[in-house]
Length: 284
Image 1 (cartoon, one colour):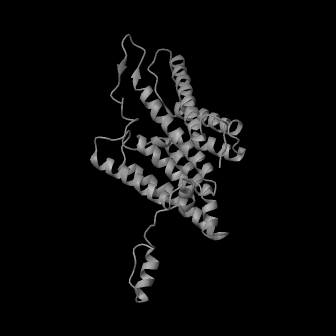
Image 2 (tube, rainbow, N blue to C red):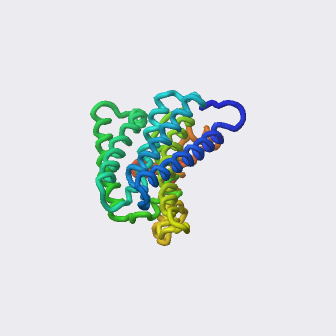
Image 3 (tube, rainbow, N blue to C red):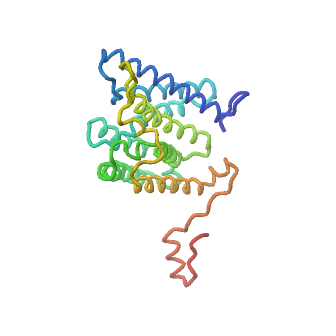
C-alpha cells in the first residue's frame, strides 16, 4: 500500500495535487496560445492537449516519487499514461493523422500492460505473443472501427463518465497485488483525460474581445449526459459493466474492505453441468 505523510490521506493529497497541477498547466497553455497566435483566436489543438497532459504526467509522476515514495518505474509508467490519455477523447474525431497515431500507440501499450495478466492466466512463450497480437488487433481495428462508425466528435466520449471508463479500464488491465499502484496508474489516465476536457471548455470561451463570448462548443466536454438518449444508455452501461468486473476482483475488494461480487459461471462450466446431468447454476 502506498504511504504518505501526516495530514490528508493518500487519496486526498493525490486529488489536491491533480487539481493544482491541472489548473497551472491549463493557464500556462492558454497564455502561450494567446502569445503565439498574436491576436488570433486560440484553439486547443493536438500539440496543446499533448503538451498539457505530458506536463501533468511529469508533475504527477515526480510528485508521487518524491512525496509519496512510489517506485520510480511505476512513476514513469504513470507519467506516460497521463501523457497519452490526454489525447484519448479525440478518438471520436472523424479523421486526422494524430488520431490514427494515438490509436496505434494505445493498441501497442495495452498488450504490454497486460503481460502480468497473461502470466496469471498461465500463458507463456508463443501463447502470450498470440494473445498480445489478438489484443492489438482487437483495439486497432475492432475498437477503432467502433469509434469511427458509432461515435460523433464531442459526443459522450467527451464526458466525465468516459474519463471514468478509461480509468476503470486501466485498473482492470494493470493486474497487481498492490491495489494502490493500480489506482495510482488509473488516476493518471483519468487526469490526462480530464485535462483534455477542461482545455476544450477553456478554449470554448473567447476572452480576447471587449466582452467575453461563449462559443457553441461550450459545455460539450465537461458533461455527464448528452442530448442523445442512446449514447447516454450505452456510456453508463459500459460504466456499470466495468464496475461489476472490478467488484468481482477479490484483491481489489479486499483493499476496499468489501466482499467480491459473484459473477456468472463460464459457458463451458454451465454446459459441462448440463452434460453431466446436473442442474446448471447461473452463480457459484
